[in-house]
Length: 324
Picture (cartoon, helix red, strand yellow):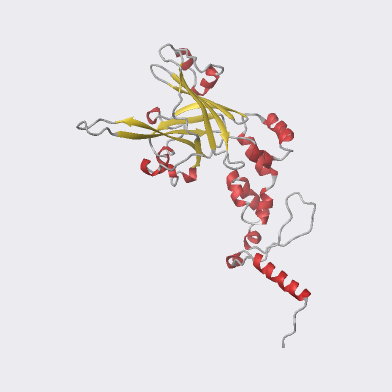
C-alpha cells in the first residue's frame, strides 16, 4: 500500500509542475547557450562579473556589438531589443536614442531639443523618441482615394460607371524638405522614383515642410505657364505609441502665385505662402480652391514593405481597405 503524501510534498510537487509549465523548452537555443544568465541593466550599480555562455556573445566583444547597434536605424534597434536580455539592456543606452532624436528633430535645433528633453521627457531620450510626434523618413506616406466617374452609355440600355482610384504620395526628409506625387501607379512602382534625382516628367515635385507639435505645414510649387502652389495641412498620429504611421489631411488648398514668387527656389515656397488665407491667391487667373474630396488619411509604408503592401492590390480587391 502506497503511503499518502503529506501536504508539504503535494505543494512541492505542484510548485515543480508550475515551474516546468512556465519554462518553455527551446532546443534551437543550444547553439547560443541554453542557460543564459540575465545581465545587469544599463546604469546598474552592480559590478559583479557575469560570464555569458552564449556563443554569439563569447565571439563578439561588447565594443563591436555597440558599433553594430550605433549604425542601426531606431526601428531596427527596437526589433533587436527583442532578441535577448543582454541586447535589450544594451540598446537602452541613451547614446543610441540621443542620436536618433537629434536627427529626427534637427529643424528644432540642439538647444531647443535639450530644453524639451528636460521639461517634458524627464531627461530620457528614449521616452522622447516614443512620445514626441515626429515625421517618419524611412518610407512613404500614402493616401488612397477613389471616386465614381460616369461612363459612355451603349445602345441607350446601360449607364456604366467607372471606379477611379488614385494615390497621393509623400516622402519626408529630416532636413525639412519633402517630395510629393499624385498618381494612379501602385506604391511598388512609385517608391523607385521618389527621390530628388527624378525629373518633373515623372510628376515628382519638391517642397518644404515644418513640424509644430503634431501639426505639419507643407507647400509644393507646380511650375508652368500659370504657377500654382499646393498648401497641405496634416496632423500626425499613430496606431500605437511611437508609431507615427498615420497622417490626417486637415486641408488641401491650391492657389496662384505671381511670377516673382515662383522664380525663387522650390523649397522656399513655404515661406512665401506663410500666413495666407485659404481663399487667398496672387494670380487672378488661378483662383484659390479648398479641396473637400480626396482627404483620405495617409498611411505610412516602410521601404522594406513596399513590394508586399496591400496597396498594390487591384481596385476590385480593395473594397475592404480602411486606412484607420
